[in-house]
Image (cartoon, rainbow, N blue to C red; front, top):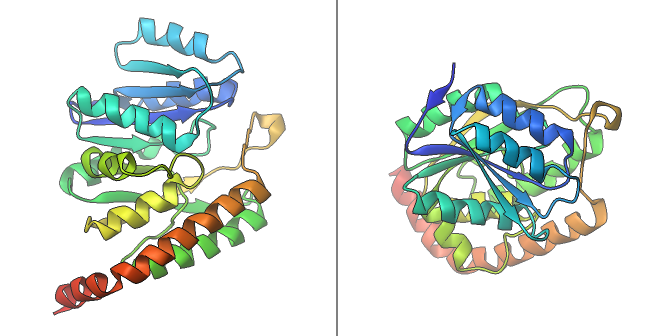
Length: 254
C-alpha cells in the first residue's frame, strides 16, 4: 500500500548505480509518496529514464547535479528543495538496492510519532555482507558513541534514516565537510550534540554481487582516510563540548 505524506518524503541520492536506481525508485514508490531522487553527476545514462519516469508520475521528482559532488552534497540539495516545498522530514536511502524499501512506512511512522527524533537504521546483515565491512564499521561506531557519550547511535554508517530537515540542514550549511562518505556518521553525532533524540530500528541490508547489479563506490583507502579525519575533527570538538555533554547527561539521568 502506498502511503502519501505532505510532511515526509523519501530522498535517494544516486551516483552511477546503473539499472539498480530504477529498480530502487520503483520499489520505493510502491510504498511512499513522494519520492525524490538527486542524480549526483551520474554518467551511466540513468538521468534520462528517471526523468521520463518523473514526467509520468506525480509522486516522483528528479534533480540533476551537473557533476559529482558526493552523497552529503546531494542530500543537502534535496534538503534545501524539500524545506522550500514545505516538507519537514526526509528518509534517506541508497540507490544501489541495499536498503529495504519495505521498511519505509515503519520508519516514517516512527518519525511521525516522534517528530523531534532521528530514526536511525541499524543494519541486520546476512551472509552476503563482506566481513571486512562488518568489522570495520565497528571502529566508526565506537568512536561515534565515544563522541556522544554513548547516547545511543546504534550504527553510525547505515544511511537508511529519517531526519528532521531543519536541524540537519542548519548543521550542514555551517560546515564545508559532511559532503561525501563522511556524511552519515557526522550527521548522527552532530544531531545528537544538538540534543535530538535517537531512535534505533533494525533494518536488513543486502550486499549485491556485481553479477546481480551490485555497485559500490566505497574505496577502502580514500574513504577510511576521510572517516579518520572526520573522527579526529569530531574528537577535538568533543573535548571542547565535554563539560556541556556531561552536564546534559547528568541532568537526563537525575
